[in-house]
Figure (cartoon, rainbow, N blue to C red):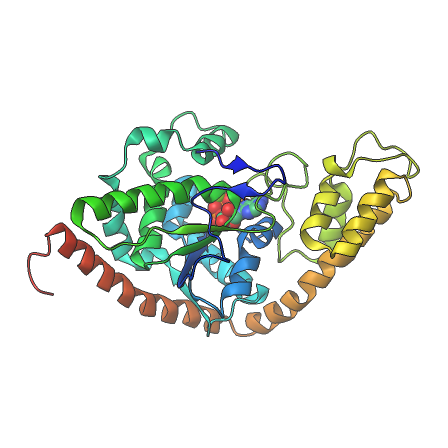
Length: 353
Ligand code: ATP
Ligand code: MG
């Protein structure tokens, strides 16, 4: 299930979308409302969604049920977190006229489909899912709940219920898309169904490392720069980020390949600055302090327009709930249609609806 790598570092995997080859129609993507969105979300997935929202019909799911897979002890936090994620979307440039924002738990048909799909996947396959294994290890879980293990099954239902063919995600989600393809294929084979096998669209920076330079950027690991952070905190966070430890003086020759800041330059700076930074670091012509200041300027530039939109939306909080509820209502019509077709395929539509 591990993606293969070409020499160039380009990923080849049959679950990965090839934008040049296929004519895709509908995007489904989303985030778990477990806290504010960060630069990792942006680089891995959100940027692609913003880029593609005028080309494809886009559904963005705020996956509150999936948030419970790890945060079941605090369901009372979901409502506020849902609001914050929607605010992050709109601030980042998701246009509610182009993208439909949906609250997962308000579409009960997703849960229904999750149950049907759960019969089509072995516990073994779910247990060997590398993403779940990594996450369980990093979170120190000794025992996995049924819901945590079944997270990819629920995700398959999210995608299938909206008949999406394209799923912009970070690389950690690729094994889940592979599972989704397997489940859908099995459904179609068994029941002569017409569900769609989705492809993953992986962002240019599929796994942004956290400020610690070790784990992936994650709110859970406390190593993230949030889209909503103020500039003073961002400056402090960038200053604290791990660089090439062997470099003591600005004139020491550095290795950008092991530097967190350089990886952020690659994700967010323009090509000229990336090349300059790499060259200057290797040749001891720029110190880490200056390099971090350059990065701060780039991040500030990226976030400034987001902050303007954020301020506008914060003046009108009801509008955010309106956008979500209108989106959810619209999306539910599609979900109802799909679940009817699913039941027809399974020959369990007992009475006309
Ligand atoms: P966190 O750990 O910060 O709570 P998460 O992994 O729970 O984040 P999800 O809601 O599961 O966040 O992921 C939403 C999307 O963002 C997924 O497509 C995921 O691949 C992507 N993503 C999350 N973190 C990163 C990262 N550090 N780099 C690239 N993509 C990421
Ligand atoms: Mg995750």
